[in-house]
View 1 (spheres, rainbow, N blue to C red):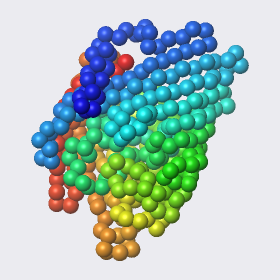
View 2 (cartoon, rainbow, N blue to C red; view 1 turned 90 degrees about the horizontal axis):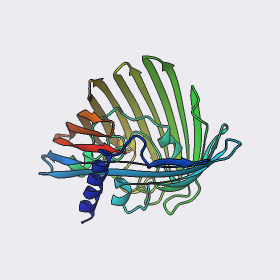
View 3 (cartoon, rainbow, N blue to C red; view 1 turned 90 degrees about the vertical axis):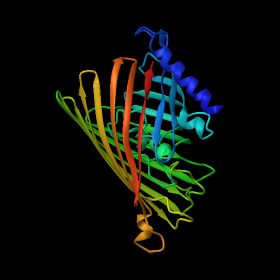
View 4 (cartoon, helix red, strand yellow; view 1 turned 45 degrees about the vertical axis):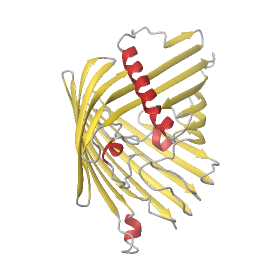
Length: 349
């Protein structure tokens, strides 16, 4: 029933996006007050040797309201919900208030870490959410632990964030989650550097986090829950745009001190590229994940678990609100390889 409701919501989002106009009432304002509602949805099908058929469904809806004072200070609130949050019994992906001025932006509430917000993913154009708890691993995963996200940070924590306004070339921020049922504290930093103009543009990102005393903490839906003395993570990414080409690289390293149970730390490396031609965009991505690499160096009784993921995608843009996509590839771990194919429809407003 829940899956059926999510698919219906995705279909409604796509149907609505076909008829919404550029002057939609979803983006409105009066005087110093402004409001905006955005969303996107996807629905399709997938096949692999691990599962005969899989219904692909995804959605995200985001609402924002702001009030700008004569002194150019802006105060606002954001609420967002998506398929990931509903599937894992959260009531919001984002629920926070913020203030913004020429000095920077401050947020407080439930939201992603600043390392995630300033991080850089791979230029994938399919509908399998490759940079955010990817649907790929729901289709083909045979209980293989995989670090699925390119950026660091724990979702769904209550945190305070301060970040500079995006001005070339630097943007720097910090976020702190002071308490949780699953850790004593979580401190993150994020840095982004942008440069270039005209045909060539590029960006670099760096993130770091320290989690004190994680207890039964779920950091990735494809890895075991974490209990340890502490966790430290670093991530780095690069995006280069030249004419119709976009090239992306990223890396993530995770270390757990005195972890209990199955390992959930390791490294993740990703590389990808996309190319635009006419109304088409194609992309190719590769991801390497190694869980337990640090423990393997200490004992041969805990071998690391390596996974290779390859995804090729193509998207055809029907109009500014609506496109169709197809993806194919596979996930290999040891001698086991699981190929897959998927296709669907995507809309946004």
